[in-house]
Length: 498
Image 1 (cartoon, rainbow, N blue to C red):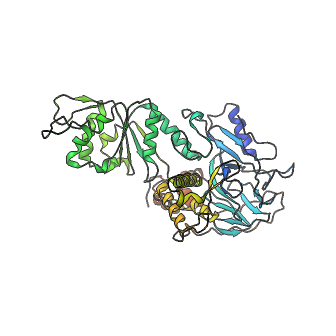
Image 2 (image 1 turned 180 degrees about the horizontal axis):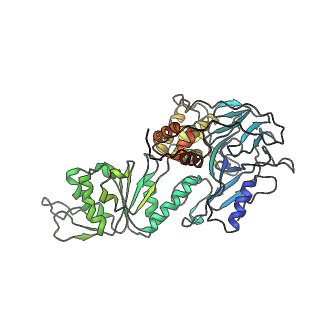
Image 3 (image 1 turned 45 degrees about the vertical axis):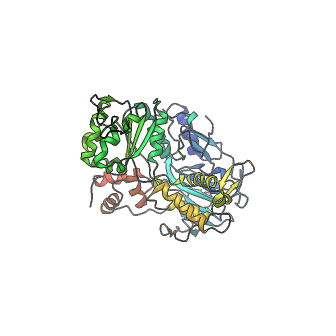
């Protein structure tokens, strides 16, 4: 395995990798605070790389170049399932060799500016602050870092092999983009659903890529038939049997052509029905027989037919709203992560969307694409736009991100995409903490924060519909596990509503 941290770099990476190499990969992954490179003026190909910050020990220095021999430095890695591949020191010319100092702490690292570049936390100038998941650090238009809480080592993949991964930051063999742990979990779940060969229900908000996921399941399966796609909301209530199962020749009127229907057309392959939750319970019942044994009957036919298809259905509704016996036919369920649950992937998605836009409309988008000396194509983004992409409260996910980039192209006068005027601040900038007064080589304690009350916990859980990670982030907790401890302490039921 490559990428074991050298002396002088973050010890978290070393500990986790060595533990994995000793055969302890079945242990619960160690959660750590990481900094993800979201944008780099001088090194755009490094977007997506992470630095793992320890929870204890001596301070670490982030800056240009390798630094002093005995100095403990922040090191960046390409983090993929079971591997941490160490990357060279930063080369950004305007960043000082000793630019930021990080003081490890279990409640979140504390950062102090010691170099020449101005430091911004969530868009506000500061000289020191305690970092929390979701925070964005920017250095004078040179570097943007996203703070996240995630496993220090992504668990090795059991099913999705490295041959399918693709290059770092690029679309994988399925066309899926992202290096966050949430995306690697999704890839594993899609592979499992494909190998299980049963009907699968995809759950997720609009714009999370449900059709792409359905195509991935089809591609990963052993099925050799067609991939047939239809939006269930467009099936006419009075003609649903004809649309699903087809009709015999000359039925219902003479001269009517024979039609195989969606089920017949997908035999040996995959039928994708998007927005299945838009079908009434009565219309959903038309699927029961064919989902059980693959048997169906074309309108006008005397004999039953059989289709060896796999149904992949999708909905952005609560699955409990589906007809209960239809829901029971889906042996596999895959929930697609929202963009707000993998914000660190937004810059990689923006690159892909802009490259696609430049290919389709070179006159409109081509001049926003730059190339490094090695030929790497990258989007020319203003640092303020990147900060916005990392903090935006997405509701339509990747679809919303794509629309925002097109609005930016429409208003940007130069060759860099700027933040559109209609994009207001996502949230008020969190006031930075007071600068540290401890000696440079001492571990700086972080002031204790008031514990969230049971009422505040219940309200946060209710606002986020029981999503613990989101509620923990709102409450300013270091991770969802911190919220679980408080929930247990106060005897709160996760499903409680105030």
